[in-house]
Image (cartoon, rainbow, N blue to C red; front, side, top):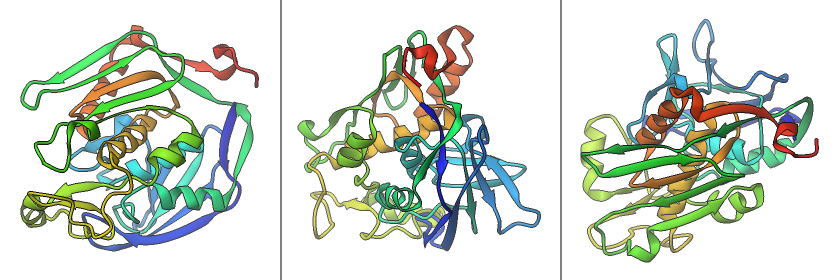
Length: 294
């Protein structure tokens, strides 16, 4: 398992789901040990923001990272696609402060990476290995998030919404991470929200670019999108997609078992910081130290 970047640069354009602004992104190869770096090229001078859990500045309805007073919003979907393709080093140039929402999933970012191609680099990958169980709770919401040792990367998420179109059988999913399974089961799952929240969000300057073309919307009774859901449990699958992207902000692929109940970006970030604050809970290992052939 060697570090990876993309073979050729590639670009895309879309709308920010919260800002409503048109934005361009340019994905460019980066040297080994660079990491994932977002670059606000609309600023002079350009501000570079490393994709790091330590740079998370906001988790309200998306994951926002910031540095030197500047930020990039909604990084979780593209980060999940990068995790799926094991991309370690990449420059992401962006012309505004929000990654475009595309169709609300990671599918179009997957397409971009497939078109750009992936190349190995002559440096071993390192992995973030969970050594002991760490758990956090939110007393107000009842949310619980746990990371435990595991030989691989597994995610088990349960959502809990009092809605007739989200029965219990659609509220839990377990995912053993691999590129094939991510593309097949997770990548196409879209972000979602409730019509009852829509007007209040817009008054706060959020969801200005949201539409039925890039989000699942539920009214009091059912899914409003004309074509319905892509999967019967698309909502919880999207929570898995978000978790993969948030976890990749560790700067390394994760080796551990994440279990979440009613979790979101805030709990994902809190849990990673809690693990990092305990030196006995984690270690960084090269691929050959995990017993894999390189």
